[in-house]
Length: 156
Image (cartoon, rainbow, N blue to C red):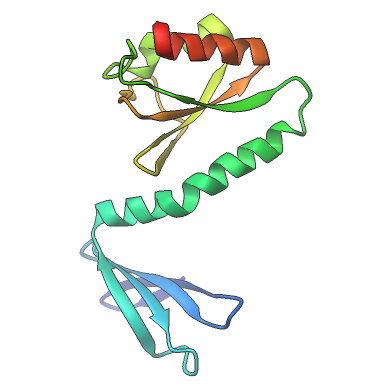
């Protein structure tokens, strides 16, 4: 992280092709995605100002596939434990209701480790997290528990 006196901070990295890509976080809460000139890494070749919502969306686009991939990779290391992605269908009795209402862990011994909504990852959702139709719920548990979790999300 590089402090930008009076402005905020800059965080960046160099890609395999030699470009520097980064984010400037301004003190007033704005964000700017930047790509440095290939020849002069201190010169900005392109930039895009992002709102907080757009920043979250971009983070989700970049992070959601990696989160699911890492969970799948990790579950291979533990015998008898599996990771599934379960949708919350439009007709689910839990669409519009809090995660805690499902009593998922008590009823199935399954853990909800994340919810993906509109390509934005919500890791470790709290019991007051409200499900929406179309959410993708990432759960970890035994095969029997995961099947039961799927039934809960679809039938109640």
